[in-house]
Amino acid sequence: MSHATNLRCRECSHDYDLAPIYTCEWCFGPLEVVYDYEAIAASISAEKIAQGPESIWRYSDLLPSDVDAAVDLGAGWTPLVRADRLAAELGLGEVWIKNDTLNPTNSFKDRVVAVALSKALEFGFKTAACASTGNLANSVAAHAAHAGLKSYVFVPANLEAGKIVTTAVYGGNVVAVNGNYDDVNRLCAELAGTYPWAFVNVNVRPFYAEGSKTLAYEVAEQLGWQTPDHVVVPMASGSLLTKVDKGFRELHKVGLLADEPNVRVSGAQALGCSPIARAWLDGADTIKPVKPDTIAKSLAIGNPADGYFALDVVRNSGGGMAAVTDDEVVEAIQLLARTEGIFAETAGGVTIATLKRLAEQGVVRRDERVVAYITGHGLKTLDAVVPVAGPTGTIAPNIEAFHAAFDIEEQ
Ligand SMILES: *Cc1c(COP(=O)(O)O)cnc(C)c1O
Ligand SMILES: [Zn+2]
Image 1: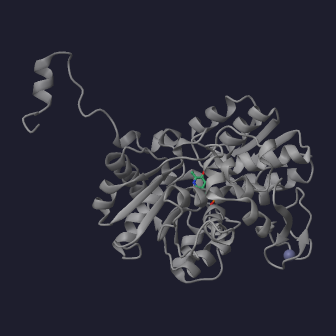
Image 2: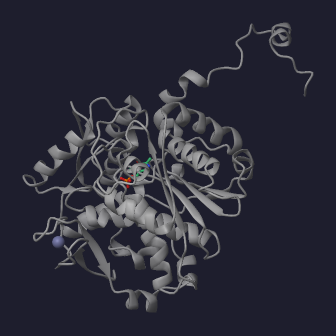
């Protein structure tokens, strides 16, 4: 049995039953899942978790759906890799990479979609849908196929070709919309009022968002039930960042962390779509929507739904933010690949480039244990590195040609 008790408005605290709804009738604020933490504390333990499945479902006590009804393609329980070579290049001490490229459809979105579609099945939906910048479409199509649901995914028509292919292959409907993500999202909000579909990031968004908390749970468990001092999180809508913060706090609430966590949370955006980082850098309280223009398409949300909450978390935790250029993103993808053997998509480049900036500024410190969340695989955005990652040399098929081209005396 799930320990979720109801939904609550994040603005005015009005309570609602657990249902496929997402905004408050009183103030239009976003709804969030509420749990019975006493019941969770009584049920959960490190031993029980350790005996659970090697997926996000090991934390089902802290999720809104019942593990027996879970849509499970194996999302989660991805490696936490110590990154000493990267740390040395950045002048940092202890750096870890949470390698979420290794999810079933190669992005962190599998965590949120697994929870959203489990809940969708429970609510009796027959069709899953979403507005997506690409990764969510991949994941919804795959999980819907696995769960026997129909799917309609809506994406901007200018998306990377690879992301369309890797969605369409699962056999659902892929609707390419001539517009940017914010146009697609607006269309989906309208469709959600018309069709009885589970739009994972519209009418079941409160449940969907909870899946992101598992990125905090796993890091704490993998560090031996300790928290990092500082995390760097990529931001699109800002939801993931706020849920990572919530996740660490919940672990303390239910008794899995002895001390109140004190994790500094920093946010990463690409300069070409940085409404949240802009507000941070300007010290502003309002987030001005922007028109995205960046290679980091998976983060290209110009009007971020959770932007204010993300700003709040970063301010209250003593973190920082940066907006990095597309050139820095490409360099950072190469840096991570060259130092740690992990190939990230552009969103990962945004995160590592932000980590580098914040290290240079002294916001991320050498004495901190740092975790960088790498949320998508490099094969998703090959175009970004095609210009900088070709053959070292092209030669005739004989040894003389090799000798002529390569000076191997250095060994
Ligand atoms: C969706 C996504 C994020 C974060 O999204 P939020 O809307 O901020 O929760 C981060 N990285 C990748 C690769 C994504 O696809
Ligand atoms: Zn409200």
